[in-house]
Image (tube, rainbow, N blue to C red):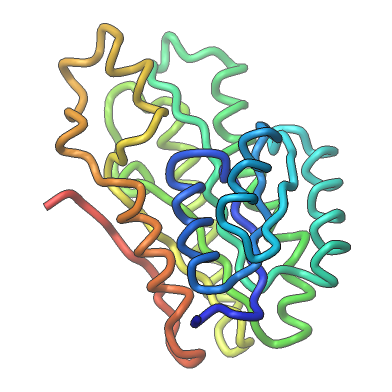
Length: 238
Protein backbone atom coordinates (compact mmCIF):
# COMPACT_ATOMS: atom_id res chain seq x y z
CA UNK A 1 0.00 0.00 0.00
CA UNK A 2 1.42 3.33 -1.10
CA UNK A 3 0.74 5.20 2.17
CA UNK A 4 1.66 2.46 4.64
CA UNK A 5 3.41 3.97 7.64
CA UNK A 6 2.07 7.45 6.90
CA UNK A 7 -0.31 9.48 9.05
CA UNK A 8 -2.96 11.86 7.75
CA UNK A 9 -5.40 14.39 9.16
CA UNK A 10 -8.68 15.06 7.35
CA UNK A 11 -11.06 17.81 8.40
CA UNK A 12 -14.78 17.63 7.69
CA UNK A 13 -14.33 13.86 7.88
CA UNK A 14 -17.72 12.87 9.26
CA UNK A 15 -19.48 12.85 5.87
CA UNK A 16 -19.31 13.73 2.18
CA UNK A 17 -15.95 14.52 0.62
CA UNK A 18 -14.03 14.28 3.89
CA UNK A 19 -15.30 10.79 4.70
CA UNK A 20 -14.46 9.60 1.19
CA UNK A 21 -10.96 11.11 1.40
CA UNK A 22 -10.42 9.36 4.74
CA UNK A 23 -11.52 6.04 3.22
CA UNK A 24 -9.20 6.51 0.25
CA UNK A 25 -6.18 7.34 2.40
CA UNK A 26 -6.82 4.48 4.81
CA UNK A 27 -7.32 2.18 1.85
CA UNK A 28 -3.71 2.88 0.91
CA UNK A 29 -2.52 2.17 4.45
CA UNK A 30 -2.49 5.59 6.11
CA UNK A 31 -3.46 6.10 9.73
CA UNK A 32 -6.07 8.87 9.66
CA UNK A 33 -7.03 11.42 12.31
CA UNK A 34 -10.67 12.25 11.63
CA UNK A 35 -11.76 15.80 12.43
CA UNK A 36 -15.31 17.17 12.57
CA UNK A 37 -17.88 18.12 15.20
CA UNK A 38 -19.85 14.85 15.19
CA UNK A 39 -17.92 12.52 17.49
CA UNK A 40 -20.27 9.58 16.99
CA UNK A 41 -19.96 9.74 13.19
CA UNK A 42 -16.18 10.02 13.41
CA UNK A 43 -15.89 7.02 15.73
CA UNK A 44 -18.09 4.96 13.42
CA UNK A 45 -15.93 5.88 10.43
CA UNK A 46 -12.74 5.12 12.35
CA UNK A 47 -14.06 1.65 13.10
CA UNK A 48 -14.99 1.17 9.45
CA UNK A 49 -11.68 2.20 7.87
CA UNK A 50 -9.32 0.71 10.44
CA UNK A 51 -5.55 1.23 10.26
CA UNK A 52 -5.68 2.78 13.77
CA UNK A 53 -7.82 5.68 12.57
CA UNK A 54 -9.17 7.81 15.40
CA UNK A 55 -11.68 10.57 16.04
CA UNK A 56 -10.32 14.03 16.83
CA UNK A 57 -13.54 16.01 17.33
CA UNK A 58 -13.50 19.79 17.19
CA UNK A 59 -15.58 22.71 16.04
CA UNK A 60 -13.09 24.40 13.72
CA UNK A 61 -14.91 27.71 14.05
CA UNK A 62 -13.74 27.70 17.70
CA UNK A 63 -10.03 28.56 17.82
CA UNK A 64 -9.58 27.04 21.29
CA UNK A 65 -11.11 23.71 20.21
CA UNK A 66 -8.99 23.74 17.07
CA UNK A 67 -5.82 24.27 19.09
CA UNK A 68 -6.69 21.46 21.50
CA UNK A 69 -7.37 19.18 18.55
CA UNK A 70 -4.04 19.86 16.86
CA UNK A 71 -2.18 19.33 20.14
CA UNK A 72 -4.02 16.04 20.69
CA UNK A 73 -3.24 14.85 17.16
CA UNK A 74 0.48 15.57 17.57
CA UNK A 75 0.50 13.65 20.84
CA UNK A 76 -1.33 10.65 19.43
CA UNK A 77 0.68 10.50 16.23
CA UNK A 78 4.01 11.28 17.86
CA UNK A 79 4.45 14.31 15.61
CA UNK A 80 2.79 16.26 12.84
CA UNK A 81 0.80 14.30 10.24
CA UNK A 82 2.49 13.43 6.95
CA UNK A 83 -0.62 14.56 5.08
CA UNK A 84 -3.08 17.29 6.02
CA UNK A 85 -6.32 17.61 4.05
CA UNK A 86 -8.14 20.86 4.78
CA UNK A 87 -11.62 19.94 3.61
CA UNK A 88 -14.08 21.23 6.22
CA UNK A 89 -16.30 24.03 5.04
CA UNK A 90 -19.67 25.71 5.28
CA UNK A 91 -21.79 26.66 2.29
CA UNK A 92 -24.45 29.33 2.68
CA UNK A 93 -26.26 30.88 -0.27
CA UNK A 94 -27.56 34.43 0.02
CA UNK A 95 -27.11 37.74 -1.79
CA UNK A 96 -25.09 40.44 -0.07
CA UNK A 97 -28.16 42.28 1.21
CA UNK A 98 -29.37 39.12 2.95
CA UNK A 99 -25.98 37.95 4.24
CA UNK A 100 -25.64 38.86 7.89
CA UNK A 101 -22.33 39.71 9.48
CA UNK A 102 -22.54 36.48 11.44
CA UNK A 103 -23.02 34.43 8.25
CA UNK A 104 -20.07 36.10 6.61
CA UNK A 105 -17.80 35.66 9.62
CA UNK A 106 -18.79 32.00 9.96
CA UNK A 107 -17.89 31.33 6.33
CA UNK A 108 -14.54 33.06 6.64
CA UNK A 109 -13.74 31.44 10.00
CA UNK A 110 -14.48 27.89 8.82
CA UNK A 111 -13.38 28.07 5.19
CA UNK A 112 -10.30 30.28 5.56
CA UNK A 113 -9.16 30.96 9.11
CA UNK A 114 -9.39 27.31 10.25
CA UNK A 115 -7.26 26.01 7.33
CA UNK A 116 -4.68 28.69 8.09
CA UNK A 117 -4.53 27.75 11.77
CA UNK A 118 -4.21 24.04 10.96
CA UNK A 119 -1.38 24.70 8.50
CA UNK A 120 0.27 26.97 11.04
CA UNK A 121 0.08 24.28 13.73
CA UNK A 122 1.91 21.63 11.67
CA UNK A 123 4.04 23.47 9.11
CA UNK A 124 7.18 24.08 11.18
CA UNK A 125 7.46 20.38 12.07
CA UNK A 126 6.90 19.35 8.46
CA UNK A 127 9.62 21.69 7.25
CA UNK A 128 12.03 20.58 9.96
CA UNK A 129 11.76 16.92 8.94
CA UNK A 130 11.79 17.76 5.22
CA UNK A 131 8.56 16.13 4.09
CA UNK A 132 4.80 16.46 4.28
CA UNK A 133 1.85 17.30 2.08
CA UNK A 134 -0.87 19.90 2.61
CA UNK A 135 -3.97 19.50 0.46
CA UNK A 136 -6.50 22.32 0.35
CA UNK A 137 -10.04 21.70 -0.89
CA UNK A 138 -11.03 24.70 -2.94
CA UNK A 139 -14.02 25.07 -5.24
CA UNK A 140 -15.03 26.46 -8.59
CA UNK A 141 -15.93 29.44 -6.38
CA UNK A 142 -12.24 30.03 -5.63
CA UNK A 143 -11.79 31.39 -9.18
CA UNK A 144 -15.32 32.36 -10.28
CA UNK A 145 -18.10 34.29 -8.61
CA UNK A 146 -21.83 33.66 -8.71
CA UNK A 147 -24.87 35.58 -7.44
CA UNK A 148 -25.66 34.52 -3.90
CA UNK A 149 -22.05 33.67 -3.03
CA UNK A 150 -21.55 36.74 -0.88
CA UNK A 151 -19.78 34.82 1.90
CA UNK A 152 -18.65 31.57 0.27
CA UNK A 153 -16.78 32.99 -2.73
CA UNK A 154 -14.71 35.51 -0.73
CA UNK A 155 -13.70 32.75 1.70
CA UNK A 156 -12.77 30.35 -1.11
CA UNK A 157 -10.84 33.02 -3.01
CA UNK A 158 -8.96 33.61 0.23
CA UNK A 159 -8.11 29.94 0.71
CA UNK A 160 -6.81 29.78 -2.88
CA UNK A 161 -4.52 32.72 -2.08
CA UNK A 162 -3.39 30.95 1.09
CA UNK A 163 -2.50 27.87 -0.97
CA UNK A 164 -0.60 29.93 -3.56
CA UNK A 165 1.49 31.67 -0.90
CA UNK A 166 2.13 28.32 0.78
CA UNK A 167 3.24 26.71 -2.48
CA UNK A 168 5.74 29.52 -3.18
CA UNK A 169 7.17 29.34 0.33
CA UNK A 170 7.52 25.55 0.28
CA UNK A 171 9.42 25.11 -2.98
CA UNK A 172 12.59 23.15 -2.31
CA UNK A 173 11.67 22.23 1.27
CA UNK A 174 10.39 18.72 0.63
CA UNK A 175 6.92 19.73 1.81
CA UNK A 176 4.30 19.74 -0.93
CA UNK A 177 1.06 21.69 -1.36
CA UNK A 178 -1.89 20.92 -3.62
CA UNK A 179 -5.15 22.72 -4.30
CA UNK A 180 -8.07 20.52 -5.41
CA UNK A 181 -10.88 22.67 -6.82
CA UNK A 182 -14.02 20.73 -7.79
CA UNK A 183 -17.22 21.95 -9.30
CA UNK A 184 -20.46 21.09 -7.46
CA UNK A 185 -20.18 17.83 -5.52
CA UNK A 186 -23.19 15.72 -4.56
CA UNK A 187 -23.13 15.99 -0.76
CA UNK A 188 -25.56 16.84 2.03
CA UNK A 189 -24.52 20.50 1.84
CA UNK A 190 -26.89 20.89 -1.11
CA UNK A 191 -29.95 19.41 0.61
CA UNK A 192 -31.35 22.60 2.06
CA UNK A 193 -30.66 24.61 -1.10
CA UNK A 194 -32.14 22.11 -3.55
CA UNK A 195 -35.28 21.99 -1.42
CA UNK A 196 -35.59 25.77 -1.31
CA UNK A 197 -36.66 28.60 -3.61
CA UNK A 198 -33.30 28.75 -5.43
CA UNK A 199 -33.47 25.12 -6.60
CA UNK A 200 -34.27 26.02 -10.21
CA UNK A 201 -31.06 28.05 -10.52
CA UNK A 202 -28.81 25.31 -9.08
CA UNK A 203 -27.25 22.33 -10.84
CA UNK A 204 -29.18 19.06 -10.51
CA UNK A 205 -27.57 16.26 -8.55
CA UNK A 206 -26.98 14.21 -11.70
CA UNK A 207 -24.72 17.01 -12.97
CA UNK A 208 -22.61 16.98 -9.81
CA UNK A 209 -19.38 15.14 -9.09
CA UNK A 210 -19.39 12.18 -6.72
CA UNK A 211 -17.43 12.69 -3.48
CA UNK A 212 -15.37 9.63 -4.43
CA UNK A 213 -14.10 11.49 -7.52
CA UNK A 214 -12.70 14.25 -5.33
CA UNK A 215 -11.16 11.66 -3.00
CA UNK A 216 -9.49 10.00 -6.00
CA UNK A 217 -7.97 13.36 -6.97
CA UNK A 218 -6.58 13.87 -3.46
CA UNK A 219 -5.15 10.35 -3.45
CA UNK A 220 -3.53 10.94 -6.84
CA UNK A 221 -1.79 14.08 -5.59
CA UNK A 222 -0.44 12.59 -2.36
CA UNK A 223 0.85 9.39 -3.97
CA UNK A 224 3.04 11.03 -6.61
CA UNK A 225 6.82 10.56 -6.35
CA UNK A 226 8.53 12.89 -3.88
CA UNK A 227 10.00 15.01 -6.68
CA UNK A 228 6.54 15.71 -8.15
CA UNK A 229 4.21 18.38 -6.78
CA UNK A 230 0.69 18.56 -8.14
CA UNK A 231 0.13 22.28 -7.77
CA UNK A 232 -3.57 22.28 -8.61
CA UNK A 233 -6.33 19.99 -9.84
CA UNK A 234 -9.61 21.36 -11.25
CA UNK A 235 -12.46 18.90 -11.43
CA UNK A 236 -15.74 19.16 -13.34
CA UNK A 237 -18.51 16.78 -14.30
CA UNK A 238 -18.04 15.44 -17.80
